[in-house]
Length: 476
Image: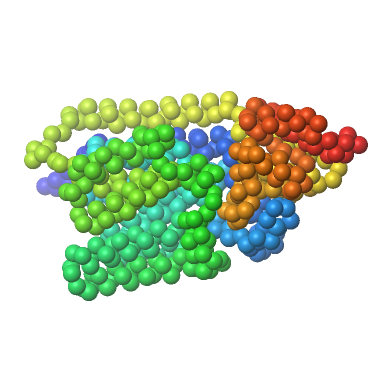
């Protein structure tokens, strides 16, 4: 008599983290595909990709489009992202890069779920880790190269934790990461932490320590496998003291004003402070290192959550007895999460067109339409000047921001802060058009000088002021 094998019924608790991740990815897909860009990053990255495809070379200096820093060394570390962005746009697939970024965020969440499962974290608790990571990404998520870095970071940590042959797959992942974003240096840093924890555990140069050290060295070498070579290392070092930290909100110190920190990362910090002592030495080293990164800059909130969430949730004390909800309740919870994810994604998709873009397209077009000679433009939000790339306009500074030297940043801050020499900077640089935030402080300063500056256009977010000589050229 043949007895049919008994098939194990699917456990809704184990499925719950994956349904949570899928719900978040669905929402992020709607955001990435439907919402207009909030800054000018995609503008200059598309322009960079077009240049690479046209010239078959990566530009290494700023060109004549910027009169304030022409010829300054530039390390376009996001060159591969920019190339794919330009290629997909040229081939009628502008949706491709936003979709890839949404899926990359999903990969990062998947690594969180897998690392929780590896630590024996119950499904409902692992779901909390996934949801907290999703909340930690809400401020920084978008069609951006750093989002691809989240997927690479989660994958590298997951692979290094395997302690088997698969750990060496972290090396090719690091190579890809280094060609997408300079955050790839986190890979050898994490591998070095693993080496240190193994050394502290074994207190000898054991085979485990030697293997971990070899992995760390291989990941370090992998960061050099880019067309930029050692220049990427120089860029990463210089970025730690770059003046952009005073002018870009994402590089500011993390505080309660960040919703991603308050909703996503802060609960993890509390859990680590309360129960982190129960984690392994390696996990404590990882959590401590990424906590330092967390408070160094707002952009690191998501990075911290991806690494620390499994550690924090695994450290929660567990009772000896395990209580499981009735299967009907568990399946109902699963269905509720799926329905909520679908509803939020649908509402986001349908509501996104009501949100106007934050870029001053109208005022920029007014200047381009009337200019007879290339004007010299200053943008209060430097990212706005990326609208003029490839156009007959020269600008002070644009969204590439990283390569601009300290004196340029100092002059920029002098103007936007309205310091006493702000007008002297505009005169010295022979700037004859200024794109300002509508009804902002800088607009008030320009409006007070009616003899020198005239407003000729405005839209929902910006106003365009020009000097009288340029106004005469526009009219003729």
